[in-house]
Image (cartoon, rainbow, N blue to C red; front, side):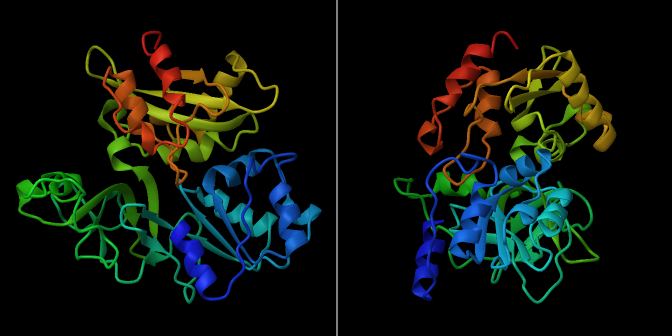
Length: 341
């Protein structure tokens, strides 16, 4: 995001940064600042929006947010209900801009197209100069079904090699270009699970494809669970992991960080399961729900949940790149509970 800030300064904008917990001393603190400083563009995460939704908060009823003309949302995927909440409870006249990209490409694969409509749950379309497609497992472009995000042509800001790689650039090729090798297809596969909509041209992101859950062989994007669970007032944050049992079956384990005085008792467990069954499907219901202490859900510095690291830990594998995490000590908790799970 540093690059976004520098670019904003370059065109004469004033940057407003807030260092600290956005929910302190009360959950609508950010909107108090938006009113006070007449902020016009607000960058925010899906987790933050889902939390405010879950608490039943209505910023526009407490603060003057008329200066706000755009919300730019990123990090994890936002539910369709999250889009609608922003228009209904913040400002019906703002432009909601959901974006998705990667630190490694220093940019976005999909995001804002200001001359087109905004549809709930969808990024408006591919970013400028990004030849984005959705490929199925046979390497065919598809529409209206979950598939892999690929980029079919070189992008202006993509990395051209890894520092310290060998002369054949094997690490670089392995990271991005080998997924469809056996099919003779040479495209950048980013590891995001998307649906490319034929009717709107928009793109829905379902989370990391290499963290996709497959209970009973059915693919489930982790955001499908987060978008439901994190709207419950008792849940501040969550992390869903696919765990293989001794028979090779995959079960969903859900870690939850609770709000206030909420307690993970049988009543709350049943509420979580029932809500997921009704608003998602029986496949989305976790086999295990476990509470985690505050700040124990691991995140990257760019605000993305790190399911893969926890999946590795629960399967007895090492996590090498702790330095990429905003809260690396959080991994210790999962090492402690691995045997219990």
